[in-house]
Image 1 (tube, rainbow, N blue to C red):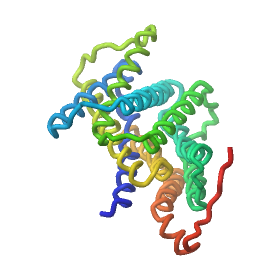
Image 2 (spheres, rainbow, N blue to C red):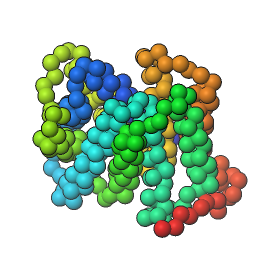
Image 3 (tube, helix red, strand yellow):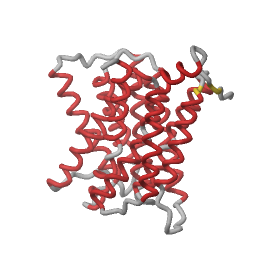
Length: 307
C-alpha cells in the first residue's frame, strides 16, 4: 500500500473508531457514572496501555522540552473537546451531538487557509459541502424539538477544540512516534480532567464498582482513544489536516449505525441518503488529487480564504 492510501485508510479507521464514543459513554451514564469519571478512566487506561506498548518496544520516555510543551497543549485541547462533547450528551441525543461535532473539518479547512495560506481545492470544497449536506440529512429532527442552546454551544466548543488538535499535530515540529505522542497527550489530558474534577463540585471522579463499568471504560480506552488517535496522527502526517478531518464524516455515520444496531433506532431512506452523501465526500477526498490532475493538469482549481 502506498503511503497516500495508507494515510487514507488510517483516517477512515480513525473516524469510525472515534465514532464509537457514544456507545461507551451512554452505557456508562446508564450505570450512574459521571462525565469526569468516564473521561478520566478512559484516558487513564489508555495511558497505561500505551506505556506498556512503549516498554515492549523499548521506546524511551525521554522527551524534548519543545515536544513536552506541545503535548501539554494537545492534552489540554483534547480534554476540552472530550469534556464538551460528553457533557453535551446530557442535553441532546448523542447522534445529534456527533453530527454537530462534524463542523470540525470545516474549521480545520478555514484555519489552514487563513493562518497557513493553504489553498482549498474546488473538489475539497465540494466534498465539504456534500458531507455537510449528508450530515443535515442524518439530523433526526422530525419531532420538531428545539435543540438545547447549551448542548449546541458545547458541541461547537468541542468541534473547535478538536479542529485545533488536528491542525497542531499537522503543523507542530514533533519528533515523537504516534504511540509516544498519544501517550503524552493522554497523560496530560487525564491530568486536565483530574484538575477539572477537583473544581467540579458534585461531578467528582469516583471509583468504578462493576465489571460492566470496567468493560465499557476499557472499550473506550482502546477503540475510540488508542486506535483512533494513533491512526489519526499517522493520517495527518501522511495526507495532511484537511483530508484527515473530512474523513471524520464517517464518525456520525458510525453513530447512526450504532443507533440502529444497538438502540433499535429507525433506518429511513433519508438516513441512507445522508450516509451515501458522506461516503461520497470521503471518496472525493481520496481521488481529488489524481482526478484534479487529469482535469486541470498541473494547475489545480482552488479557492483562497482570506483573513
